[in-house]
Length: 375
Ligand SMILES: Cc1ncc(COP(=O)(O)O)c(C=O)c1O
Image 1 (cartoon, protein in one colour):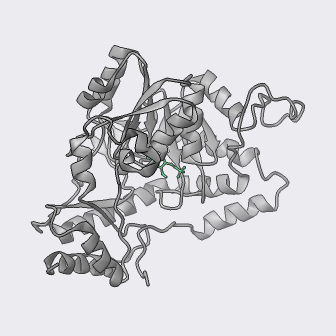
Image 2: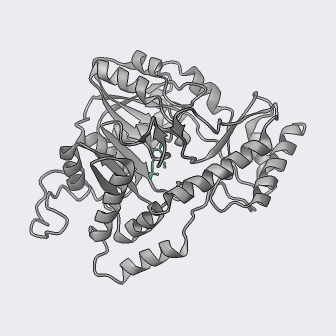
Image 3: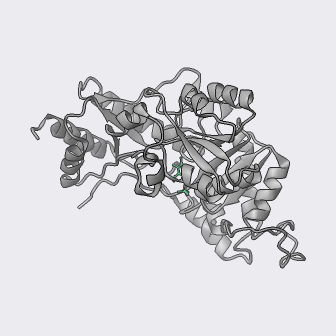
């Protein structure tokens, strides 16, 4: 039985009270709390506008549509990422093209992105994997030379700062996700930030069945100017998100403390490669704590099994997207040596705000025992 989970939400009494207060109000969707959450999120990230949506995936989908990506367009994405990054491109009829990562940063390598550009390329999705900064300077440079749109996928990176600017505010749009394993959670949910007013207006309509009326007016409720979706986030969810956003600094600081504790405890083990805790000029936002096994031995699955038997959950984070059965058509697409090499050795350890010192110690000693033991 799992006793220490991989992730866990951190919902406090204020968060609960905020959600309950909404339930006593007449507005459960498209109301004042969503507007407030959007405004505070835009201000926090440093973008002109923010649009609350039902998931990070919905956010990626709407960002692509609102920025004009469609049938036959190629969008360059990492394969070492969560599958939604590529799936959203397929939703709009586009074609995800996988580029390789830098084996150190685990984020898109601008040289591999440059090599993947064709006449059909329209955009790059720059994922800030694990809350660590994508090389936006390099990627924006490739984008500028080929006139490409840049969507930042900051689903794992709320609060990440790159050269003094918050992740999500640098590209044409930035997408955030609030699934329960994220730094802040609304159960399911997401947010797209952008300083492109037309794109924001279109995303507001697309998330609401193609209705272009303002949130307060019900006059045009049955007018659908284009094909849209129901990607709305409820007022209860927005209240949860807003309440957590207001204590984001405390949350990020706690996560950084845990990451440093893990690193201090595990440092010096020759069988482990630890994530750097300090990256010059950047403020990290810890999403998961992922170590890399130094070599193919001991097999990751073996370590994971021993950890599980000891009641500790671990994760593979990530299997390459182009190796997934749903992406069989992409399995032969180009060579992604860093993605293939890294993804065989990554291991996510339990990482959540309320993890205790004793639990961290138990995770580390169990991992060390597993690494020492004979297969
Ligand atoms: C990088 C990245 N993009 C997109 C998503 C999709 O978000 P959601 O699960 O909210 O749809 C996630 C995570 O869940 C993610 O980690």
